[in-house]
Structures are given as structure tokens and as C-alpha cells.
Length: 267
Image (cartoon, rainbow, N blue to C red; front, side, top):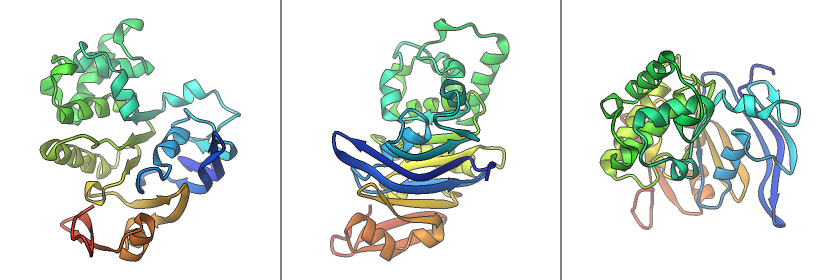
């Protein structure tokens, strides 16, 4: 179907003779909000890099926003995809203001001085900051922001071009509880916004799934163990097999929680 936002068929990724992903088949449709879960080393970040068109698979086909990898101008297509990741965060210029970091996202640049921007661009940057609750920090240097505020600024940067797909690789990693909850709330607002793009969020913590997400994928050892509607996928049996633990699962007030029945600690 040409209206799929993402379509992966038989995707395999091998690096240094190690198989990272194998036999990945996946379709993301407009309006869907996906969470990708799995233990460390399961291939989640590699999957994000393929969907974001920064890594080519060793085998299989990848189609994103109607363009098939290998038959499309990748640089132009990337501008229609909003991305956040730890690697991108580490490349940000710390002395730039939040507003400057966001406006540079128009050209996927690391600094605003490499391109020309008009007043409409700066207005769009401020609108993106307002959308994630960070407008008050527009003039503040990036290196003076809290970890949670930095993540929300990077989310605003990803929204700068009004993307048709948003891919967030472990956006809550390293955040304290207030920062994590603020970001989860922001993502929940996006998930419930009908004008928002298709969303893919990667995490290995069940309790970080924002309310409003509709679909889930479980990855283990580079293979999909389950994928589909979030209620069908996030069962005790499927999560236990994915993480290799006996888990109990509950959903309360729109939030998910999972914990080991032997350790009694939430994931």
C-alpha cells in the first residue's frame, strides 16, 4: 500500500558478522502511534536508524513516506522525518539558545549560522517550542537547561519541519522522575493530537509508554516477537518471553506497568 508511512519487508542487518536484525516485517500507517520495546541489545536503535534512513539494511526492502530506499533521494526524504536520539543530542552546540537549535532543524543542521532563516522560520521555531511547553526557554542557552528541558527542545527541533513521521530513540534516557514525567506528558499530548505525524518511540521501560499510543512492537535478539495493537501485544506472556522474566502487567489511568513476579520491581 502506497499510503503506508513505513513498510519494512524481510529486513536484515548484519555488522561484523553479527546479525543485528533479522526478518523484520513492519507496517506503520498514518495516525498510528507505535512504541518499540525490548531489552538492551535487541536491535531497537538499529531499527530506528533504518526507519530514519541513516542506515541501509543488509537485505530486505525499506519504504518510508512512499520512497523506497535505494530508489529515492534520501537527503530530501530525511527532511520529512523528525528524529531525536542520544547521538544527535551529543552533537548539539551547547552555547546555542534553544530557539537557535530548533530553527536549525529546518535544514537538519547542527547550527543556525550555516543557513539563512527568515522571520517565518523563527516564528515556526517558537511555535514548536510552545508546542512542547518550552517557549519560556527560547532564549536560554542549551547547556543551561535541565536534561528534561533539553529533550523537549530536541523534540521541538524534530517538529520544526512539520514532519510526516517522528522517530524518538529512548527520549527519556537519563532523565530524572520530574523530567521523565514532563516528557511523557508532552508525548501523550502529541499522541492524542490528530494533526500530529505518525509516531515511533523506542524504550525498554513499560512505564514510559505515553497514554494515547495505539500500537506496540516487541523486539528480542533482533527479531519481532509480537507487533500490533498495544492491548494485544502488552500481555504478561508476551512481555515475559521478550524480556526473559516472569512478569506481571497492569494498565491504570492510561499508564502501563510491568514488574517481575519474583523480584517485585517495575520495569
